Image 1: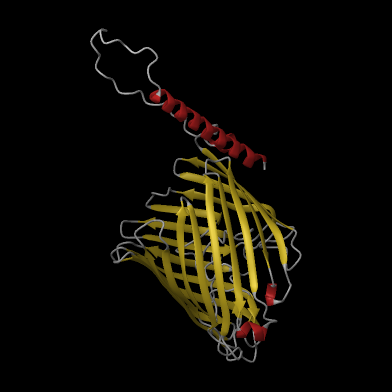
Image 2 (image 1 turned 180 degrees about the vertical axis):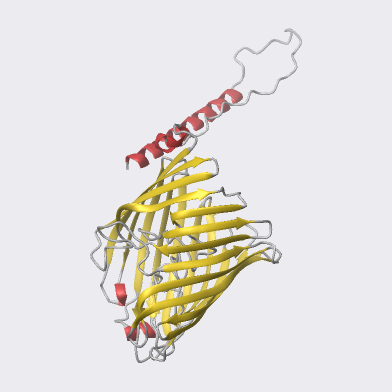
Length: 472
């Protein structure tokens, strides 16, 4: 709180000083001369331009954000504090199962650079307070631990670069692979990634294992998990577009097959993303994926798609319209030995299929329409409407986390899940401080009323993010 007060005081003083200086300059220019020269005085001199009014000194970041100014050039540091108040009504679609709580997270990052080698270490402490409904462990809580620790060989402009160690990974829209930064604990991987850059394309090849947040001990990867793949990004394949084909391999152990036996998952996801511009101020974003593999004696046969079209009107203050359709296959028969439910892998899933995060990219039809507008400078407001149906009535409704929320084992009488309305607003006050708030309400449809008590779900939040040590 002292940091916030210091920052706000500094900016207020700078603004007041600038106003005083500009007002003084205006009064001086408007005031007539005290002793005007008589007509018989010496010939008039050539007029000279008015002096430029004194300007307010450029605003510097507050003292806590200038730590890098006193650091040696080879060392950079950054701190981030985030506080979010959030809650929900009717959790699990159960009437009056409500909660409200606080999520606090602090991160400290240091990077040391020597020639073409750099080392980065990031520690994190994430806490939850006042939560009384549901779990309070990961991803809400992650006591002080090592979140990232990696070495870079090569820079962001090198033709070939290597990153090895504990790190974030994100590709494209992060629908399949992302850092899940919205979560208090977020996500990291232990592994290695090679990036090859050329004029036609950038190629990333990686092999990793997702890090598990463990209570009371050092966070670890492994435990049978293996994740590897190749991701390509090119702006040369199609005009005015970025094409991103990829192949991801996932292995996990100790999973239950449809027969009830415990086995290992061996799965390959092949797909691609295409994003670009069309005539008429239209943008498009497409992504499609096919999954094949096995889990014990079961075979994996699943697929998913994302199709989005956005239209930008001429004025910046006019809403930008969006329409999209998301589909992910489900399992038609839970006992036939074929796993048809799409696996969304390790996404940054928040607000991809609704701000309430009650719907994920599994066994779902999701139609979205909405708009975002910036009526005031740097203050975007987004309003969206989602309508949901199950892809398969015998499969579950899955949350953004991928966990099953509701299911009718014998098959639901209706696939209609419901619809959701979301509103979100954000405002950066200055480079070190940003505010975000939102509200989501999911109206329960026939499926939820059959599979659960059927109460509608709502979730508000308000979040502040403050960067210290670094300028922004």
